[in-house]
Amino acid sequence: MSMKRYLFLIGLFILSVACEPEDKESQNSFEDFKENDFDFTLDKKLTYKNLQMTVPSSFKKYYGKYLTVSNDSKVLFCNAIGAHFSIERFTEKDINRPFVQDLIIEKDLLNTFQDGYALKRYNSLNDGSMSIKKDLFSTSKKRGVIQIVRGSTTNLYSEFLLYATATIQLKDEYYVFQFITTPDMMNYAYDDFRRMLYSVKAIK
Image (cartoon, rainbow, N blue to C red; front, side, top):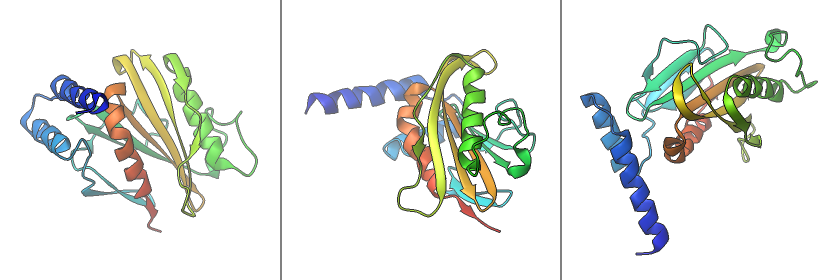
């Protein structure tokens, strides 16, 4: 066995011991996650405004709104891995909102909303940092960008967290997504977040 493979298996063992949840439903979800090579099964359709996508069924409705800008956002929580997922919709009518009004990029609301949202998150964190923004779609006509904001906050957790943040344009609407979890768990769930984003489609 190669050293790289050995270290990888050790990492999986530590993750499974450290993150295994206590309640039965979450334990079952976590076991499914492990047995599927630490990948989620996207088995539930989620509809929000004029958008539809697929997400893991282990993500349940979460009623707290302190993670998002909009009051009509949709927030889900997966107890099995301790991760939040949120969606918010913005349009041209929102360009005067405080988080974007000083960051408007002419004829580019996709990056306007992404930059404003990521900066707002960054400013809310202790020891915050942001990754370089990247295009989400390379072989699709859809427009989207993604980046990760890092830092800690006393509002949700005392530990250091990663906020994978993405914005996708559907016609004249802009949907901002967040996937929030610990650095260790993000190592395994980031590709699932991207698969969730790739499933996004307009329904109107």
